[in-house]
Length: 501
Image (cartoon, rainbow, N blue to C red; front, side):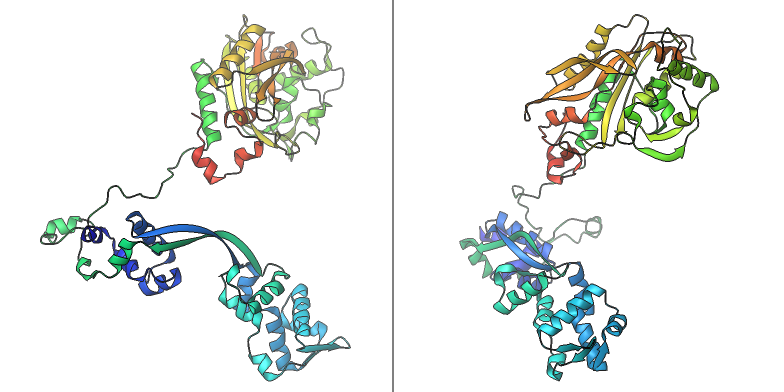
């Protein structure tokens, strides 16, 4: 049995086996293996019941950013001490200039040297007080930096003293929490340690084309492989779970006969607001809700501009409009799109040029709003947009499309509430229930575009069903997430587990 196991050992396992009564550092030194390779070999030996491994929590003292720099170039007090050893005394301002230390470093160095009675200050001047041996010998703090990293519970009293000193200073040391690999030899392991491994040095690890060509494998033994041995888990690459959900939503709309709309994240206020009959003094257009760019955009043809202008000012499509003077400069302002409905307005404009003003369109994409970030709000979010242009379309059709979509997304508990939007009438708000928070979450609005929108963009008043619910809040329920921010925090453990389907 022991011979069979010895024949299974890889080269690294054979290197490590005789040294298992040592610590990890000593094993690496004796075998010439890197730490990762030695740990992997020990784990493989554990699979063969040669050692038993366990992990224990540990706190380690390690160098921080400034500590790494000071280990190479010396602590500020060492630089100042060497300078004073050469000059004997220095004006304080001159010491700062010559030492090339920052103001904070000079203060820290002076404090450290005064504490050890190595310098004195008089009349804004530094005087050396240290003895020659004190200058040449390394301080406890310097010696401590050189032994790092070290486990917190293994510190000697003088090392704890240095730790306390250096932790008071900025970014020299930090304490990291992690796990340490421990192992102990089994009875089998103790027996194998006494075996001679030289006879296994010529074991062939793998058959290569060159060995087959030269037939050099003949007369040699192959290393035995344990096909039942555990191997490391591999997490294959896959799409982010939010992107998976977006693709699923795209598939639903496509299967329902919709064509996809696309467009830029950056839009003019004309397409984002004006074409959708949102008045130019509407709160949604103000800075607290919208990210404006310091740019001026181009407007489309004068014909469509005039139509939109009329819809706002009144006496258009049987509407009084908003009864104010519409301004082109306001429409030229460039924004990060606040909704994908700007794509619907562009699509309607293009459809208006055609004889057959009919179709079903959808879009899925990122939108941006200047929101206060919390568990249910973010400054960017995914939205799915849809419009149905049909002379026979009605409000019941609208609710039917939405119900089918959310059922296919896996959500049965959806409700519709009467609401108001500047560009739809009638309008509804769509809510989904969050079971963990026990609240209804608003995910977007829907309705039938007002005549002011359709007449201006299509050239005639045609029923246009429209909706634009957000996807991110829907995903919270699907993935049992209680905080919207978890969708994008990129926690690898969660990313490996989460899958939409």
